[in-house]
Amino acid sequence: MSDLRLDTRLRSRRRAAGLSQTALAERTGVSRQAIVAIEGGRNAPSTMLSLRLARALECRVEDIFHLTRPDALQARLAPEADRCGGSERVALARVAGDWVAHRLPPAGAEAADGVLVSHTDTQASVSPLFSEAKLARGVLVAGSGPLLGVAASRANRRFADLQARWLPSGNRRALDLLADGFVHIAGLQLEGDDGPDAAIAAAKGALPSWRLRTVQLAKWHQALVLPAESADAPPVSRVLETLADPEFGADADRMPATITP
Image 1 (cartoon, helix red, strand yellow):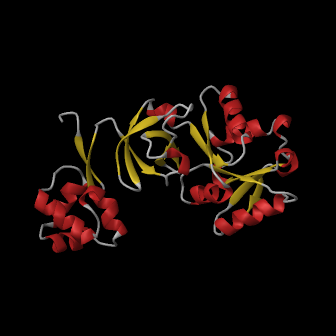
Image 2: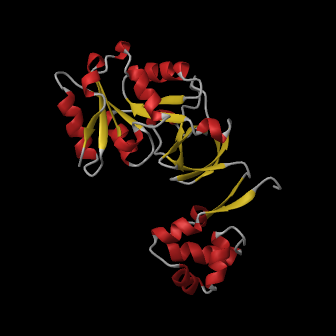
Image 3: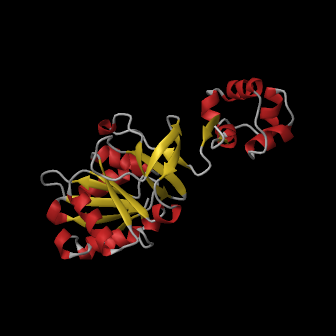
């Protein structure tokens, strides 16, 4: 057990409950300084205090504290996809400054970026299989259609330091993952005679307050949606640069188009 340490999410749980450090201290019968020390990882609470904290925050003790390895990354855990069946293999990347983890199929051919050490429904400690510097160059693209996998593979070959990954999902899940900050890009499959306007309408409906960019891949009946502020910066911009190749049929005149709230 000497290679494990106590990890705490007390600060984020307290803030989510709308409580100040003083208010939480009063509810649990300790000083504000004790709460500050626990949140800062300088003090491990007793079993009794852990239970009081969980009761005050209306959650489980394991939602606040858990054991993790010193080299583990703390990541937001994406909702599990149907095909992943409780797998401990995960894809890792930074999205909007946070590490995020997506379960991968347990027997899939795709390489994992890390392995779950412990987790709750929404948070995970992950043992990474690569350096943080390499993982931070990852781009996660959720959506349906193998074109997205082809594009990710082509981008990785074109840029040696890029780690683009396709996460298969339907249109609704892809937009939900984008809205919740779990992927960089949502790929939408256009049906029948649906054109670019259909993709824009879907994006506006799911993300009404966002300033977005869209990329139309008319040849493949696909459209990509992403936050406007990430479109021009690597590593995301390198995926878009790859999609500009004629092979992928991106509409150069509309790439990328900006959608404002």
